[in-house]
Length: 177
Image 1 (cartoon, rainbow, N blue to C red):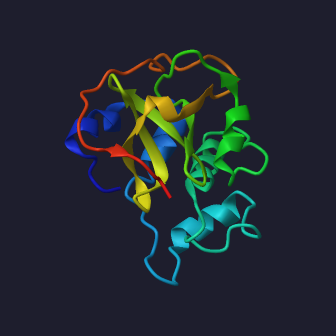
Image 2: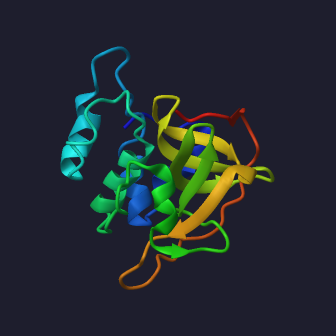
């Protein structure tokens, strides 16, 4: 895993939730430019049973990323997980976003999905796939958020699932495709 940017280096010490730990393990994965596809991303499609529908990394893969980390964390992905807005039915509704929550956003041409790692006054800091063609953290305007969903914990919610206040830094992402 490549080194996390300084504002997010603290994430490497977080013990959970498991969905976040699984997502961090994929940090830095990039799609392959041009006609070729990253074999790692294609392997995620096989692992999640989506290889028939997901055939190249030119297809939006934010939902595939979330399906992969959710499955690895022991949860069932939503039906048709490649459609980002379908993640609005995952787990349970949360009133306030917290570490590891699934966030669903609107965007021109569709939707976007990723995991909450923090927020500032106007934006969520989102760990997701297909953000600048890679797995990274992007700032996305809170006004674009359609749903905040919490993993359906089988036992108890991890103690470190909490809102995280971060400094506003860097540009807002306007299109995660």
